[in-house]
Length: 320
Ligand code: SF4
Image 1 (cartoon, rainbow, N blue to C red):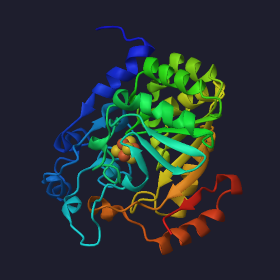
Image 2: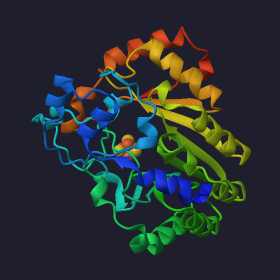
Image 3: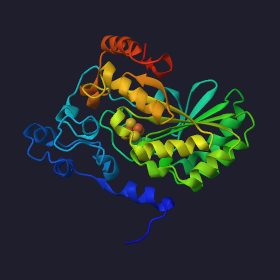
Image 4: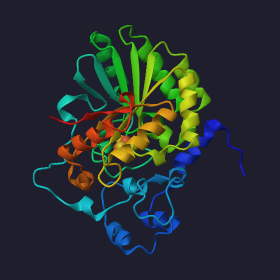
């Protein structure tokens, strides 16, 4: 067997995926579950993709496993609601297909279209294919940011920006560092939770040596996603002077109660991550079955505030 150094390990784990929901049910000993089998008997546009390293955190024989429910295709994805248009959610603030400028002080760069995992609730799922190759727009992006002196923070997102290899992340950071008015670099990513080995020594060196204050925002919805490997990777990032925040999405039957969220907040702080935001689902036609109403969300947050210290209470975010 080929020896894998830590540089290669994450790329191998990224490629080692389950791409068929039937195979996943088999691995979890759920291949006799008629309800789940009926639910996945459907053709959906957003493909199925789960790295095996993440599957290892799912419980065997549990059709309601909160990690499984985030990734398993469901026939309800095909429902169509007249009021929801699946319109490209970003277009109103899009400068170019890789650049979104909504608030004056900060700008989003959509670095790439790929993700390690395909989360069924994702509101970007129909948009991901529209993200251009960054190489085609990088000159424009750097020029746009250089000319807009009110921007002091750049946010890298995608897809998942950490799918980009260390070498290319380093090149981008170096280009941004030449723009004096940029002070903060924020990275929104789910990858270090799905594949903790993504946090390579090389990446930590790049981040530690940057002149930017770097904030990494993880996306974790349930305490079961955090295992020892995730905690180790987060420790590496903290040693590299990276500030760690988390954002979650409130998901029906997955994390929509105060006890589950209290466990998540405790586990996050054990991993050195501050619970930052909890988002109400951004609705598109294919994800409505995950929706928690605003009223219920507010009640959950009230209950949560009596169970955790103030610094463990994420802020509830929703469109007004
Ligand atoms: S990793 Fe993020 S962008 Fe990718 S499918 Fe999941 S929620 Fe969507």
